[in-house]
Image (cartoon, rainbow, N blue to C red):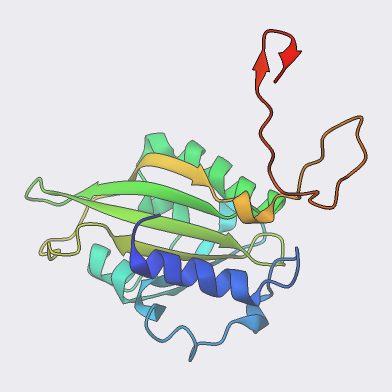
Length: 189
């Protein structure tokens, strides 16, 4: 995650997330997201196959040159990437793990544009908050882009992990803090 706007939405989502539960759609305050709202989209559906864009910000609309609200989310992706996107959406919605997709799209004049697509779970099973931010912001999208294709996928779960314990030992006052043990063969140093 390198883009400032992607990090801003992720930090906002972490802020409204209470303890280890995911936020509800009603927790979203549009005024607090004023700077990142053009990059935000909301996916809703009864099942993964019926996910549609309930709300699409100006960036999503600019990529495809028309309002994407009501469009199937899978129609935005290349046919060969749709299974990967479906699996990623399952990870986000069922396991409640935020995920970052690196994506690219090619315009009619054969120029590629690169994007970060952030997917964040809502409390309701299949609703997802997302953002799409252009990586190469200096390049203006002049022509409509073709379908997105997946370059990379990364689960953002470090903040959600529970502190680990060493087995067979009582927890120390510093339990949960990482420790380093160096082994030389079978001898402990």
